[in-house]
Length: 243
Image (cartoon, rainbow, N blue to C red; front, top):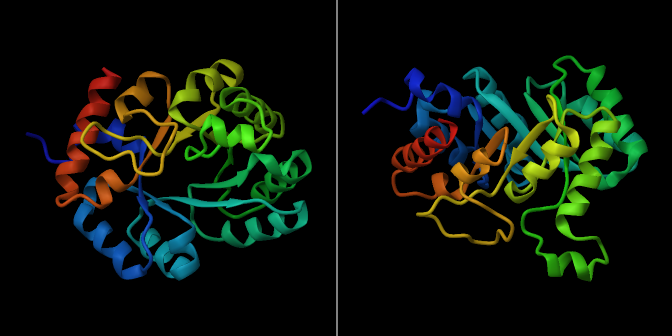
């Protein structure tokens, strides 16, 4: 059985971010230390960013980890642009903004990232995977797939590098946007994990078979009794899907 850090896992490793959805630097370091050289990509979300963002990012950067800063910026164009100029001083690989912020905000975000030192990938958040069709109806929004594709096309038109989307909508986004447009899929659930608060999800293997570019791996790994064993099960499923 190959070790998780060996080259047989390089393809799925490059497609993965482990979500550091924890409240402190200590908790984040425990996950990173346990997973060691096996994982080279991490997602830093709002909870950890607000608690200890700079120190966590510095810790990951020192270890040469790929960083997805999942802060979902959504504000007036000037405010979003100023915030991006600050966070893009860090050596992050990817950062996101809400597609619903509209064309002017997305354009301001694109321009700010283009002028930054590290020029990370700029990704638009479409429909949150926790939202059901009933939720969208209550918000008087179109059905999920229609809304995701519409926002993805807007992001591509405004020059963004890709979108965050449910695995259920990846095929539609790829068909509408194609090419090198990046699809980032959160909230996948392997067969051994609970669905928790996610409504619009598939397994990691199913997501890749539908054309997902990158996956965010969360509680199925980080809350497992043995994180490396859980990660191996997911990565083996992903490898099978890719072959």
